Structures are given as structure tokens and as C-alpha cells.
Amino acid sequence: MGICRQARCGPEFLTMQRTRAAFKLNCRYCRQHEQEIEANNLAKSLADKCFDKFWSGIQKSNNSKTTAKINIINGCSGDSAIVEMWKSHFESLFNSVDHKRDKELFMQRISQKKLGQ
Image: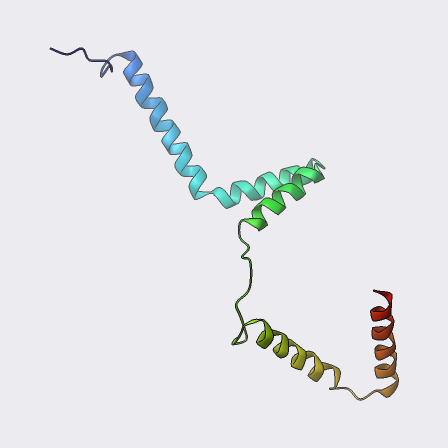
């Protein structure tokens, strides 16, 4: 007959059952309220004026949700198609108002920015 290495009765067993159940309950609560807990921790670090901790938490939470690249914008896919779509969008905005003086000032500022690089 083999030796039973794990107690299945007695005070140690009952304590183990209670602590294991409490641990599992707390783990389940944390998983279900993860976003709320994270937001509360960020708010506490901000209220305590621990700005490094606050911005570190923001960076961690944002980095886990980002993707490397956006694939489709307004039905356009691919780098060149997306660039062309934005180009035409901003050209139409820019050309929607006919103010020669404003246009000249804008073009002058753009050329100064290009020279300043």
C-alpha cells in the first residue's frame, strides 16, 4: 500500500481549500476588471503627482494596443494609394477658398520650411 503524500482532510487541507478558492476568486475579479484597475492605478499615480509612473503606464497601455501599420483608409490600400488619397483631400481643402494673398503667404511659409530643413 502506497503512502499518501497529500492530505485530504484536516485543518491544513481546509486552509488550503479556502486560500486556493480566495486566490481563484481574486484572479477572476482582476481579469474581469483589468481595464478599471489599470485606469484607477493611472489616476492614483496622477493624483500623487508621480508623472513618470503615469506616463510610463500610458505608454505601456498604448503600446499593447497599437498595430505596426494601417492597411486601409477610406477604401484605399497600399502606401502610394493612401498618399494620393490624402494629397487629393488636402488639395481640395486648400483650393476650396480663393484668397490669393493667403495662398501666397502659405506658399511662402512652405518654401521657408523646406529651406529650413
